[in-house]
Amino acid sequence: MKALRDTWLVYSRAMMLNVKQPVWLVVMLIQPLYFLIFFAPLLNSFDDVPGGMPGFESGAMETFVPGLIIMMALFGSTFVGFGLIAELRQGVIERMRVTPVSRVALLIGRTLSTVTTTLVQALILVVLASPLGGLTIYWPGVFLMFGIIVLTSFMLGALSYGVAIVLKSEDTLAPTLNTLVQPVMLLSGIMLPMALAPSWLQNVANFNPFYYAVEAARALFAGELESDFVWQAALFIGGLAVLLVVWASRKFARAVA
Image (cartoon, rainbow, N blue to C red):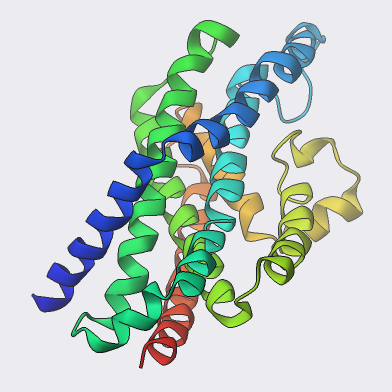
């Protein structure tokens, strides 16, 4: 019970900081909106191709928007560690050494705050995509897709906080995370389905867990609830989330021991 209470306290504090500084929520939503307004219309012509384009069987917008949501979760959750570095510099983590708060709760509470923010952004993007892009929404699939978003955001949030507590420098954190994020994004088929890629690139993408997250999101968006990509994404992303939470929790415990 104490761990749950401590997690709630840390979560509440993190959410209060987000509410006081809503600019972060807006900024992370603007980039996906740019893609939705200025890039998505280029894909509409794919719907008119005889026989359809590979990977766009469910429709251009129905294929693009789920990938866009995963991209938002990817970038929004990966860079939350910068806020932790600021707290390290201000002595917030140092002052927590003398408190009885659970060391694991310090990570879980912050990460849950990241997940909540990402879910709010994803829901707003889905709602806006309907009138802006003519998106057909299958809500049962969308709500199941949010489960993939939760796992993805939780995993990346834990990774970002763990790396931040190790590096303790924005100058080092930024290039490190960018080096990790860029190939992951390019090999996940976020912008265009990997079905359009040459076979060698598709084979490489099979080793990228985010490829399964993107394909699962698209399948759920299209109402294909029994797609193999759904359980594969849950298995790969969920497994990585557990491993990274354990690793990051140990780093937090040592930092405030």
